[in-house]
Length: 91
Image (cartoon, rainbow, N blue to C red; front, side):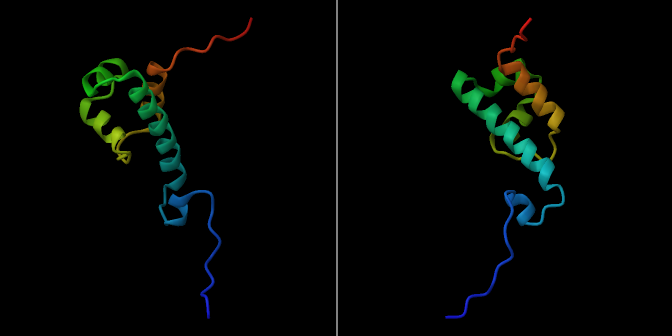
């Protein structure tokens, strides 16, 4: 049996698929994953998420579906910060 050799993959599937902005998309996907987990953990509906995070309801829906092309890393980071408890720095 003759197997075609495949190029080695990376740890970033988006890069392997040829996305030009793979690193940025991966970062936003990781933030969205954490944000969605917190939304589920707190049992929030889209209107509540919007009120707490400053994201519009369409943006909340996009984050929920991981449609992140039009949502910046900064907006996701800010939204995530509004749902996570603050971390106290040691004195």
